[in-house]
Amino acid sequence: MFTLRSTKLLIVLLIFGTSITSKAALIELRTSNNAISPSSEFEVSVWVSNLGTDLLASYDIELGFDPVKAAFSSIVFDDKLGADLFSFSDHLPSSSSVLFTELSLLPSNDLLARQMNQAFRLATLKFTSLHSGLATFNIISHTLISDMFLPISATTQGLRVNSQIQDVASPSIWLLAYSLVLLMVLKPREKVVLGDQS
Image 1 (spheres, rainbow, N blue to C red):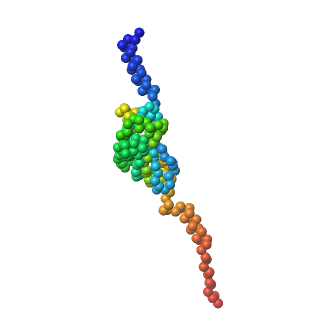
Image 2: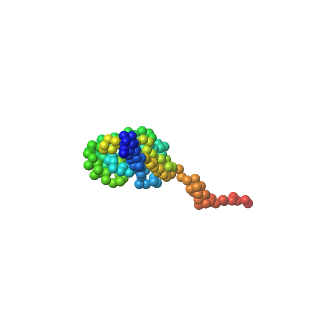
């Protein structure tokens, strides 16, 4: 026979057992090109997955980056929360991070229709490469809210982009040395005319 204490304990175990066994969502940074050409634009997209039965209705994400290696230029929000017509979205860039947010105005049924896939993209950010080396991108902070106005726990995964920028303004020292040697070899020799020694 269950007592009041055992009933309370069972409820606590059910509640915390569900939260422990449920998987956290994943916020992931992706790019279509990990090798960036000199001074070119490249995209970093923000994906979310492993939501389970939750529907994402709002989020705040701050993406950090190395300002020495990359510069932020623009952001485009996807339509999984409603895009321009059915959501409020905004972003606030700084020298080393971009804070962006979106709040959906759609009912749960419409969110379900848009978020049927296990993983979907939230936004795409454009950057310009500045210097050679690995450019690191990571999630500094995040908040995910479901359609039931409940927080969704999540883990994050950052990204590294290899920027292979060469200094095209200065020729290679070896090429310069080779050109000098070639110039000396091909330069016509002046004829030496000896004077009359009689």
